[in-house]
Length: 167
Image (cartoon, rainbow, N blue to C red):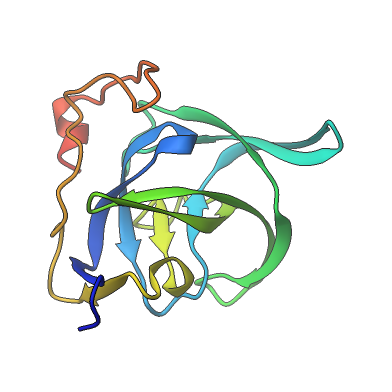
């Protein structure tokens, strides 16, 4: 394996410090080119001449108990083929990904992933040159525990219940 590449499982806990999302379970999907984040209540607007998007994220899988409101600059719109074979036009944002104690910028498309098993899909573009995926492994990287109620930027976050934490 090339130097600097880390071996991770097909699912891992990740964070997006810039978005105040401290813990979200991700599927590392080498079959997908683009990364996708579940976003709802999306509202696009222009601020100081820049296209922006405001949206919410449910970071806990199969739970709507906690949410994080996010604002981000829209880089572009991208046409993406979804898992059902349909074509969608999605907004694209750039943010820092934190995974296995490392951080790097990635692009995320925003879409409703209510019916999908994971709120976050990390595709090849986000992983290339940094991560090798062990298809038989899970949660090989350490992650921040939910029992710390303070996000990296110092803001308070709502903790999920014990049953939600184990999902």
